[in-house]
Image (cartoon, rainbow, N blue to C red):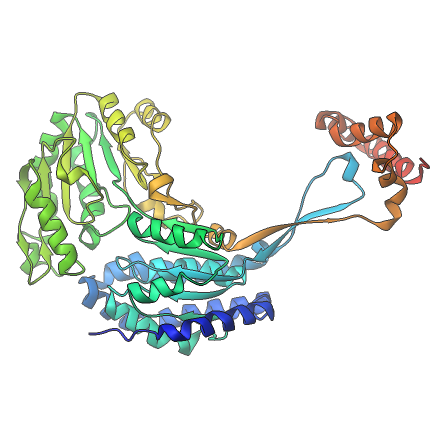
Length: 501
């Protein structure tokens, strides 16, 4: 199947029209935003089978994974945004010091403007629509660029999108590198990108030309640190599930495990039983639940990595290019400088590094770029605290993996090379919102504010210092005296208002 590309000559007009729509305040009413969120929900819900079919064609992704890993979360995120939008968008009135008691100070939540959202191919619905929900909720106009590698999903979204979403506010741009490069020449008010660090650098460089803020959801080598007190069957089951779902093509998949030799040996003994429980003795022909690599380019990259490892093949190692099939593969006794340890693997190959102790494991993890996720496994709270206190990561799941992505109340995002910014739930709304500081000073306070004008004198300086720089505890001490305290503060405010300087 070939994807119909957007004509790049049309891009300037598309951008201009969306900017014009934004300045017309089309997307600002909450009622409009909720309507568009409901339409997005309907697009997914009414075409669920079509989305599942397209995901299967692109990634051999089964309906179970399609719904639990993609479609279900998008629908739930849209419903949550509809339910909470009013409270998210309400102005936030802030506490002020005594000098501002008669002013009104609040934070106003405003949409940033026109935004560009560039999706990824491995979860092509989730990673495009989840940030888009935040953009709709915030009141932005948006251009969405689906990944051209997941061609069936990109084609389906391009077909359905205009039938459900307002084209005056939201548009799809289809295509590959040429179209993305052309898009990046235009000025946006925010760019949200999910993908590799290599492309992330290109996105950030292009954004810098216009001083455009970015959210970069990247990846990296997310490690498992397993201590020698772990429950091996549970460790193996949870890690292999997280590694092999979507055939390892998950940005927060466990990339490698670092542990003592006893843990490695026990894991290797247990793993075949777990894999057979999941996918049978021959996942290629005997399981409809095992996904495939996205295309031949990525297949060749993974096979080249595998061919260069000096580690010991403890399980798997089967490749079929015509079927884009790579078996679940475990590589033991991998050295710290092995080819498998250079970059994120993004496939079903799982290397294990053996170390002498926990501190050596921590030292190695810290020698690499900050990972998007960290997965420590231990029965000891003290050990877990030691790991958390001495490592960094975008997110951490203790004694499990991947599942923090499903908690909308937790921020999802990286740090350093694994990303910039975060989203999910209200944080998606915040990503595409500007917090505008608003302060209203009544004209009736002119006698008070006169104290700041020249010519300066010592009395005014002391008065203003007391009003603005007194320790909050002093004011709280007065206020804590109940009715008497409130009366005192009101009297101070009244005197200040009536004073003649």
